[in-house]
View 1 (spheres, rainbow, N blue to C red):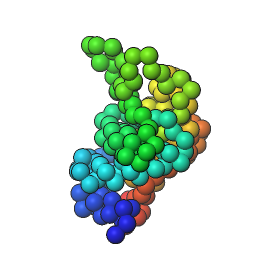
View 2: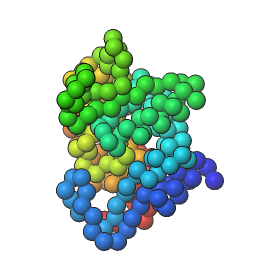
View 3: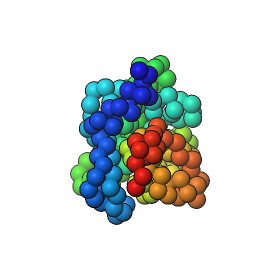
Length: 186
């Protein structure tokens, strides 16, 4: 089994639920739900996701991968590790939802003193994308810090409007899987 099929099966068995009613972050309801954390935090899942995102980040010429906490944190960590294994290191950052009340009070974490995102190409990552709201929050903060952000990658694209929202923001959306690949209709 190739790595894409292996990751698909891991997501299907650990992170995909069908039946019932689920409320999504966007506020929408659905009869299907993807909770990617059980896959992202599984040893094999972390390796496969990290390798897939690192390969795409290298193709896109990214200097960093980043995204909004909490969903992006396991992805950017695995991606940074697997990019080093592949011999093309890519840095990782994440954007906090709120300023922490101690320390540096930074919204963007992962940079050492003296490091900056100014002029750096950042690929924004998400675990599951519905409307794109979480990624757009990360993009806004990263761009405010001088990052060049033109692409977003998600593990699962729910195909519910994110592509259009990203186009309006000057972004291209890439995905590893689409919701319809899991046989889901709503």
